[in-house]
Length: 93
Image 1 (cartoon, rainbow, N blue to C red):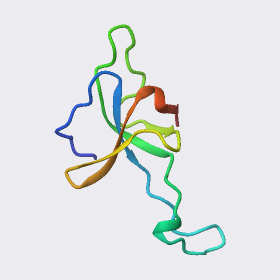
Image 2: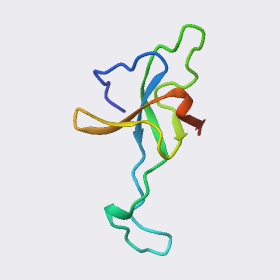
Image 3: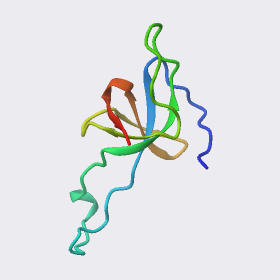
């Protein structure tokens, strides 16, 4: 179970924990950290209240897909996270 963050995003922002990057290729080749692609999948760990006329559709615990360059990388309590607008999320998986 995920621990509760002491940070609450504002308005239509969400905080996403990116999924771990793949360590090996399908053929078994180990990929160094510098060559790994940024994951485009993660789980929502906090959501804002939404805008006045636009409630948020994602909720804490959802697994989502987002754009390759979406969000801003932040570090909270030693954990690497992304904060982004809900509109940067492409799909709920």
